[in-house]
Length: 111
Image (cartoon, rainbow, N blue to C red; front, side):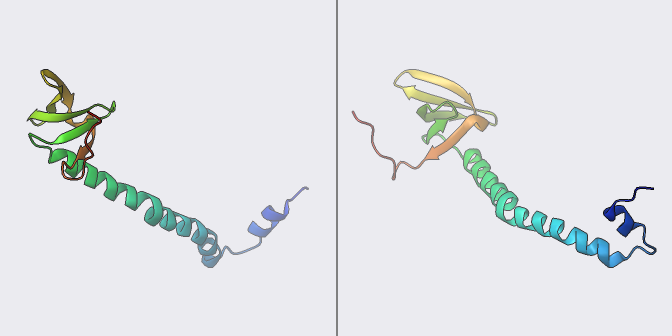
């Protein structure tokens, strides 16, 4: 009969609860590290971005997901109407806006 060393260890009498705990501790530790270093910061960043986009109002400068910059003319629950150039307005879904630019810190375009 062929028995591997790993199988021989597990078939040896009683199974201890401490052995299972010792085996699971590294997995739990890895999950905790991933949560605090990756998952939690990403969630806070997403909440801040959602709050920023939900607070868009008329007159704000925004950047769309496609990289277009414009000034918000009108906002409702789902859409934002953006003026890209004088007389050229587009309607964008608010969730596709990537950034709201502060007019005080924005650099002027090369006009």
